[in-house]
Image 1 (tube, rainbow, N blue to C red):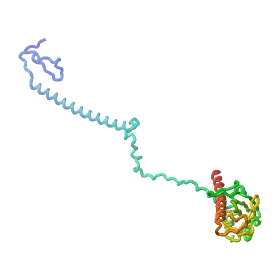
Image 2: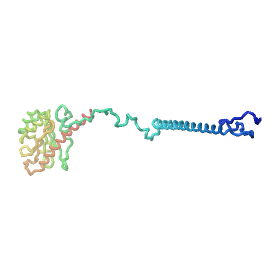
Image 3: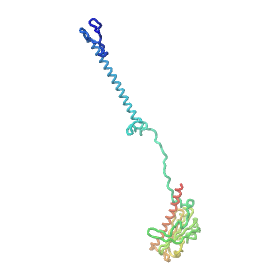
Image 4: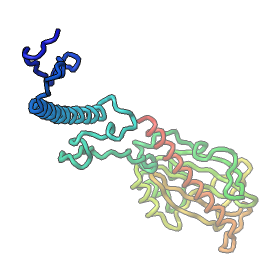
Length: 295
C-alpha cells in the first residue's frame, strides 16, 4: 500500500527494528528528518553508556563475592590439607597472644632408692635368715688370684665364750646377741673371722671403739685345721658395719709368731675382713631389693 504524496507522514522509530520500519524514502519526494535522526542517535549513545556503567558495577560486585567465597573456602574444612591457611589457628589460639597463665603441674620424681645399710643397721629391718653358712657360703672363696679353703664354722649366742682377753667384757657390755665364726686356710696360714651381732648399729660401733689391741676373737680349729694363735703372736683386726662388729685373727698353723715381715699373713687377714664386709653389705642389698619389689 502506498501512501503517495499528500498521505500521512511516516515517522522512523530508532528503537524499532529496521525490518519493521516503514521506508522513509518510499516516496520520491520525501527526505529524512536529520534532526530527528541526530536526536535518536544521541539517545542511543546515552543509553549505551548507562548500560556500561551498570554492567561494570555488577562485575565489581561479582568479583568481590568470588574473592569472599575463596577466603571462606580456604579457611573452612574443605581446604586442602597442605594449605597453610587451613593450619593457622584462630587469632585467640596463636602462641604468645594469650594472656592466660600457663598451667602448672606439681613436681614429680621417683622415690629415692632404699639404702641397703638401713636393712643391716637394726634388728627390726634385718630379718633375713642368718648363719655361718649363709654369710660364708661354699667350700672356698677367691680374692683376686688367691683361693682360700673354708674350714670349720661355729655359731653361739654366748658371745663371751668366743672371745679372749678384753673382748668378752666389751661384747657383753654392748649386748652382743650372737657370735658367728669361720676359719679359712691357705698353705700354712690360717685366719678366723668372728662376726658379733647387736640389736643396733650404735652398739656395734661402740664395740669397735671400745676394743683395744687385746680384744681378740678366739681362733677356731678342727676339720683338718690345726690349732693356731693359742700362744703365738698373731695379727688381729677390728671393724664394724651396720649392727655387726667383725674381727679377724691370722697366724701360722705351725705355731710361729707373726712379724711385720710376714706380709702374706697380713694379706690373708685383710682379704677375709674385706670379704666379711662385702657379705654384710650384700645382705643389706638383698633385703633392700626385696623391700622395693614388694612396694
